[in-house]
Image (cartoon, one colour):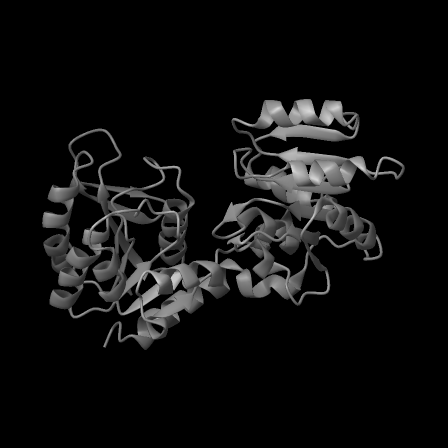
Length: 350
């Protein structure tokens, strides 16, 4: 299948998780043997219009961020590519309308990947961008509800979650010195690590260790709080780790705790659960994290530090696991198959 991806930003130019997701889907499609071309702002040096990376061809629509020029050109470029399906991100929203033109000329379905972290506040054409695609994909039911509020018809949306790689999980040995409890997220104003630290402080009389993975502007403040709570001999801040290191840590740990105030999809939590951790999620109204533990035996939903404390204690009743195949529906191959089924159900390749 030939797939055109319209994304003005790529991970080389933006740290947004939604950008990383779209790029990961493009690379996963390429790995399956599909021809994928990403129409984007140029992120590489030189004068060549196209650049290949990880099996994906990147096509420079503009050489620098320029919304008007990007929107004016991308529709025709997509049409000339003659794709079987067009996949677009709603940043900027008007790019969806240009991608719709390209898809119409190519007689291909248009699918929008609406992650939730796009800077759309006050932008024009948001409602039109939501109604133009044949399908709007969201990473979680929480984001899907936000998309409905933006005016997208319920019948036009579907949930396509983030994915993990079970082959990589199985091939990575568990860390021998892994902690009992692990937390992994950017340490910013939304991470809310304090809820976990307060819960751990109440467990001083028990035998446990905890590791915090990630870095960010709030790290120093949290390290200070750990010292003030007198649990700094049990809580380790290890900063950023690569994926292999994270998998090893998660496979060796027993409990993964997620407390963030905002999360469109709790990617690290999913990796932890797939690696066999018992999941403990503090419910937040602006977070989708609880969706991963609801109605699951090895999952707890809490609303206070006291409930997190109780959940960590109760998690001790569950046996150790280094992989949890009940999450196989989130494996990369399964999610990519669902994406391809979406394309074909909408008429791609007809």
